Length: 277
Image: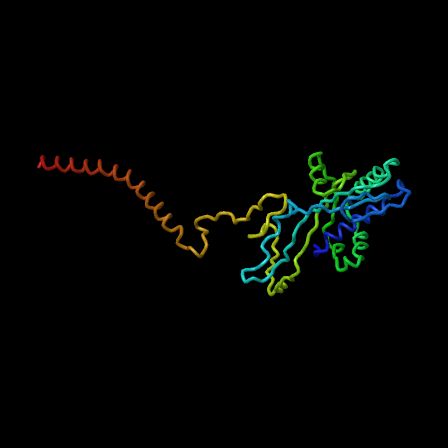
């Protein structure tokens, strides 16, 4: 995160990065300026670093969640995620191909060092007009990637530069620059009570070991009906009563069947005695 001076700091640091890496290919004095291409091409070797567009970063524009509580207090600083688009043009003696040599040095430098070094950001922030820049303390690094532009896009870009003749140039995009707001959020409340529990694996409510299956709960073996717990002393009594009643009925049925013929024989003998008498 950084303040509103981040955009200008990136432009100045990019110019320093190019200026410090022109050798050994270039053994002549080269001016590196942070301005748009001039209407009158300079005669001495010159590189212009021109920031022509600032756009929201598409991958970070929706990550800035609501920053205030229901009562309006600030919870988090709002941050704008930006991409910076640079046009780097080179001027020099055409007979000696100075412009092409300079563009080659620019491409080699940004391909070799695509991330803006912190020491160059701090050096750029020493300018009086960049005093107070905190881009060097930002954890987010700024990376340069080349931008592919066809003839149509190039002509439109140079057409916006009124009465400026085209010269050999390359386009680069710098991502990501985060600009924070100025308000400070309300400090968080201190922790008043800690609810930390330590449970071994397998205990009720304990987490499942990583890479393992759910632990099997340990249960007591089933007890016999007559060994039921004291909490339920009569749990098996109705069962035993019904079993005893069934056994009694089963034993009584054959006796009844055997007793019936005996009563019939006794009745027949009694009738025979009556007839004799």
